[in-house]
Every structure is written in structure tokens, then in C-alpha cells.
Image (cartoon, rainbow, N blue to C red; front, side, top):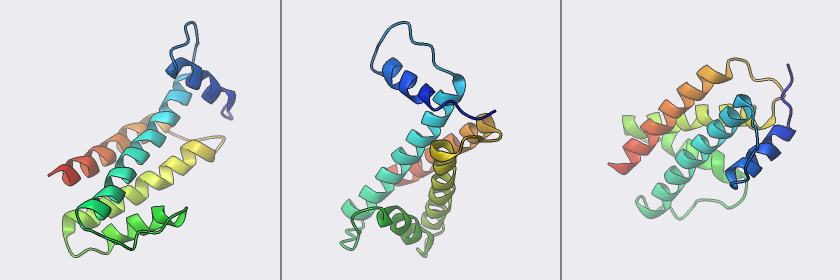
Length: 125
């Protein structure tokens, strides 16, 4: 069944603290997948900027692919893994944010949280 996009509005109200709002589990899973991606992506982008001192990070929508490719092309295995997992997260985030139907969203959620956790842990070392 196609996702009811108004559920995101209900989720926004619930997140703001409004009482009595009922939100579907699918809306929560979709939002969680999206937020997990952005947590990992922003941490990776800022790592490139602040730790690696990459001054070539572009502005605008191309920055997402740039960050992924920068890590994927690194000689260090753990950095390449960050790029691979970040790319997987980005693909799933796009599904969660744009597709009317996302098959197996519960398992996708658990997988994506593991990817994000690995990225965040590696970058925090």
C-alpha cells in the first residue's frame, strides 16, 4: 500500500510535543532512516572539513556525492568502508523520502542504523 505522506505532518506535530497525535510506524521508520543518513553524512562532511582540512568541499546538492566519493577513493580501508556505507544510506534515505512504497522498511531501518553507527564510531576514533 502506498505511503500516506500526511503522516509526516503528523510526525512533525508529534515531534514538536503536541499531545494526542497518532503517527504510523512507517512514518517513524522513514524519518529514522532519513535522520540516520543525515547524522552520518554531516559527521563525515565535517570530518573532511575539520580533520582532513579538505578545502574543496562544494556547496549545494553535489556535496553529498563528493563526500561519499572522497571516502570511497581513500587508500585506508576503514575510510573506504565509510564511503560505501554512506552511499548505501543515501540510497535508502532517498527511498524513504521519495518512494510511495518501500519494501521491507523495518529491516531497512535496522540495517541503516547499523551502517550509521559504524560510520559515527569510526569517525569518532
